[in-house]
Image (cartoon, rainbow, N blue to C red):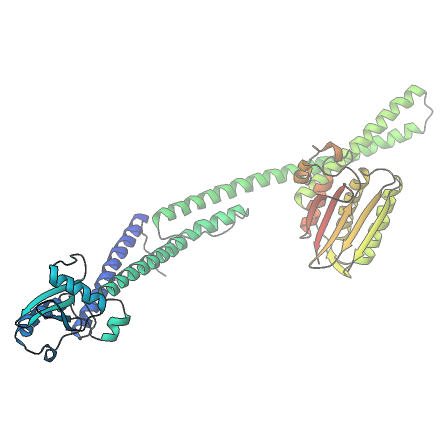
Length: 454
């Protein structure tokens, strides 16, 4: 397949200009050609035809005794007067008759009008001939119901010119849009974070230069992101390895602390031992958090299975009741049209739900209700957990799903270190779902909705 010829934007606009000027010329020439053709076929007259015929009738009407014997062409009318300018006979209407009589008496005529007069003197009186300057139809009905040929000619020229302008504008706009398509497609792909695509080319050199720049930018950005991804991947692997390596000495240290706790110690030694126990527990949480960060950043390895959702939901409710027990929180749960089965990783989905429940319980007042609703109507399964706490701030609604976000101290967690909702979001996204955050108008607390495809 041959390569398409390249052109420039300037040449394209020159081509548009040439087409426009050529088309406008044709818009004028074609109507004129149609009028000329109609004249040659005897359908219309030339613009000076009535004037010439009227002048040719002057000697005839002067010498002919009986005017009724003279044939008057279409478009020519007469008014016959006696020597006292009294009307004898005419084929004019009253308005035309008044103008003709005024011309006979004064010789004045409207220089700007199309209607003209000729005054003829006879032995028995006078004759005023009226004719119209301009083309006319030779058919009387056409003269009566159609605009004059000149007006029709102008209307055709204007209609052709407007139609041509609209057509050329639409045609060249479509052509330019087609050549801009590779740029728009490249922009859309990059906007969607897709750098692995084949970019198309444009026939217009200026657009092709932009396409080439986009392609170079795409390749550079792809290489940069791949390098950054490899660096981050290596860093995550190092953190994960370090966290796993730290677990062994920490386990040994905690074991020794437990052994010391079983020995006889004085009060001061017990105090120091309690410091060591709290510090080792804190280190254990830190290491667990590092492992969670590594797994969430790399993406969890999903063990997809067919989950019996009613049974899964009952298990989640029972686990949530255990978490709520210490604060006297009562779960109020509703369910509508639960699906019999869903596909997913049961362990990770349970972890996501328990993270949300734990976060809700932590920020709920003592002895308050916790609402857990499951709705399977429509294309998605919606699990909504609503507490009666202080709710999310506006900043938290925007950033609470981000890693390490703890700016909203009212809903910060000492246990999750800004990782709770981030981990939930990662798990739900891997299940092709969505995590939605809002505040409840009824309880004024936080509402977390998990949407999963059915």
